[in-house]
Image (cartoon, rainbow, N blue to C red; front, side):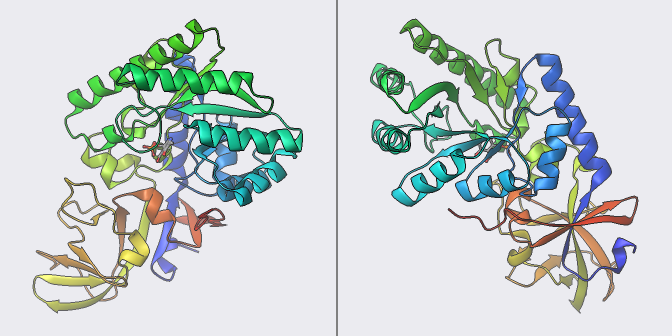
Length: 368
Ligand SMILES: Cc1ncc(COP(=O)(O)O)c(C=O)c1O
């Protein structure tokens, strides 16, 4: 079946572009001599995680335990859960998953969190690998070393992990996601280099205190070619790179031809000369928008058109819409592909206009 015959709205994945994106980043990681551990939060589909491993990734990253479980069930054997595992239910689930013949690791950024994780692992008679999360500017989780006091906290946490009987210190990691919204490429690249240097400096302080710190992991698609070039960085964890999106194009980190995901929509109404309406809104695209973006999605092949505003079930296009007729099928590139994918049960994988596979987005809606 040709994809134009599909019911709408429908999430399409262009496999030729996916393969090109995977190859480009895997080649870069190889050239740099850094391990590639893509974040699977972008696609949430085990078949694509397997393609990432086949193209050279050492393992994947997931944001939630429940996402990791889907990926383990899909045959992925090495997963870093880039998040703090807090609470007894989650610790029990982590232990259940850790008993499988797989390599699981997770994040810590506090003595309280590490102590609870260690206690659970000791009780289960297991060892668990952890990476200390470092905040390099996103101001989300993670310890920062802006002051000596915070650097002390990193060393204290490392010392606790080393002396524990359930945790092993695998290294440190950061997500330099604050750089993703910098439209000034020079500023973005300078910031990315500073992030890499800061991470290497922290790893050296940990080693100077007498502890091993083998992994220094960074990751953000907009600067995937920059942060990992700092000598001493050992791992990169880009996520969005597999699909790219209108956000990455807007910051100059990708080209329209690198965008692999579009949402096939139908024009359902032309109520005024300057207005058209499609059958997809925030329930289809999510309402994510970078601060500098003025629309909620870009038209593939028609850069002069964009989605001006959204309701849950409607997308409204204002402007010269004379080329749009009721019943037309249009492809819209989402602003933020990770959250758009999360809105869909299925993805249709397309090659040269033909449907090659229909995938369940198995790790969508995984909140825990
Ligand atoms: C911890 C972590 N690592 C890596 C990534 C991948 O970032 P990007 O999608 O910009 O490549 C994310 C994305 O949210 C993340 O939260």
